Length: 404
View: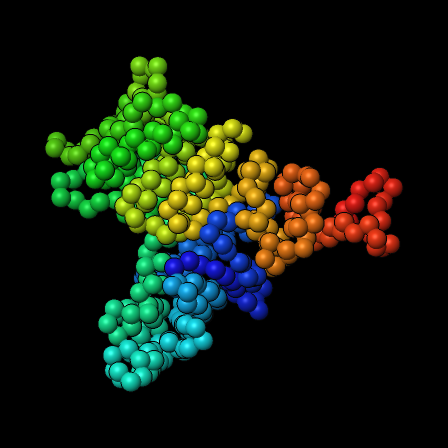
């Protein structure tokens, strides 16, 4: 299952309202926009919808989600409204047929596939807890098998905030028989590395080292252990498991470097590649949301990381949604994968190849780099007209054919 369209409203009709117009998504997507245009928020609300589907979402005060999915050539249309931390509207339509329809107080109807064999889309009444979405609470592979694709999609959405520094300070303790790291939690990078290396002892580490080399880091080994650059003044009781972090050994360097001593750029790359490779090897992800990819990296490494992640996503049939406002990243990704966000007060408008094909095609004739398209579209709507026969489309005195 892949997400195809997504829109969102928060506090609609109130002073605090924030509206994201319909976002159209393909298999690989680059979300661009100026600072404070809504890039990070867009990825967060997509992830927020997935959290509601798996029962991990926190009920909100006033939200409206609208999403369209594609699964086995079927179209799923899903609607969800929250008010005062309770679901007031929830509906699922599959290929034009209403399978789930629920209003306030959790009361609604849902298709029960085994109730009437002659009518597999017959709906029965139900009442769910008003603060939980029915997609989660009514999950039943026998009576409501049509909910399974939504649950599986949501359970396999992963978000990684590339510029997030909080992850670098996270350590891990390993207990015999203890739970593995939560692969939905991007902060648990040490635990994810440990668990995946244990399960795939050779493949995982070799793939990680190849990826790091491709990006420009010559690393001979990656492992976990107590940090060697930090001393903890307060120690646990005797027998308490050690606090572990990530450590690396660079080619030609004798010293072992722990995650506290790594550069921010190296640690960000290492953490992201650990999560991506772990997800691919464990087949635990179908959608990757990566915010501010390449932030803090030099030009060559930023482009190499983008290329590597895009290649991995393409080979694994993962839906990839990444965001940036870095010009070098923009120049490296085809315009037909772009989504340009532009915020005017409380509303975020969306421009991409699907809804602005003529504009994108005309820009392709200019020969300019992709970042120029962003500059012309980030603050104002732009028309690019290459028709020399139209008297209204003359160039100005400077010879500039663009009209903003």
